[in-house]
Length: 293
Image 1 (cartoon, rainbow, N blue to C red):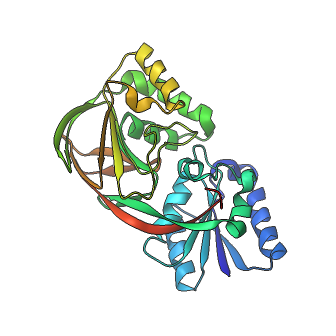
Image 2 (image 1 turned 180 degrees about the vertical axis):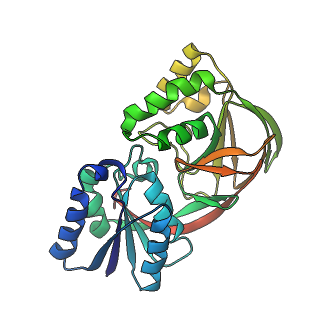
């Protein structure tokens, strides 16, 4: 099997300790793989490297990094015969956690050899691909602020999230979905492919990544007490039971905002137009997952 590891030296724990780069090289040698490792040098470089790997006949292309690296590598593999491998080492690791690959030390490397390929749905919003989630409003504001931090991790989300919660204002959006149109005052709005943002914060309990459907989840402005209750529900598979939460299933959505602004795709901030066209590509990416997943 021809394997290409794509290592992001700026992602998550890789910034301080690039031990995963050495671990990948050891893995190649130990298992006598026809493998190589390359490192990213700039934003979007991982997509180019993934496309190059496919052109050179790699059957397995592995991302070593956080959700942003995952997004970039997977973008280069959508619709190809190559299998995507994931060694997650970022702050949230939403896709990895959903699929049972939560951290590098929890069998991620072993999964590359002993796991099984699973075809999953992927999505696009305007010109941007996403694999776990995209969103706007409060969560996009957090993504912008988080991207500017030099020290990240779970604590980083709290450092940027608390001031954003008190300053961010909801926006009126019109959502065109398969069953009609909804007018929403969205403090935060996500279109989920998996069940969670990351860190096991499950905003769409029961969502499946290969069922041909997204779950749009919208939350209006709530008070601090209610927000604390919602945070608790994120970890108990009951978030969508809150009366204020709107959840809409669908493979395609059009969201109309009053003006252009920020969104995020898998946690990465993107500036885009007021009109968002969201489409699902069914089972368009094959990813290696644990055999029991």
